[in-house]
Image (spheres, rainbow, N blue to C red):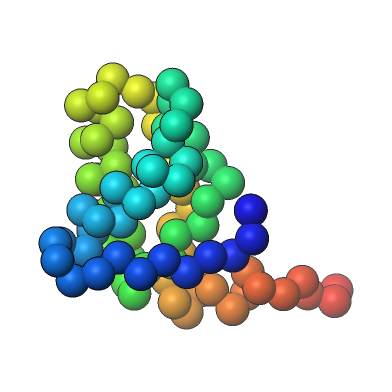
Length: 85
């Protein structure tokens, strides 16, 4: 899947909207397999809280979760290019 930006709006809490968006895009099967997804957050705390919300949702729906990879803004540039050596 190509890189995609998603605008979630201001009408509800951001992390709850992010969980709903992730599950609408990647959670159609019996499991919540987000292993191929990279989520960029402004800081590590936001990534930890988003993971906590994903685990809560998976537990409530009785579905196994493969969590996405969480990176911060500072780690993102290294993922966008390949090192030459």
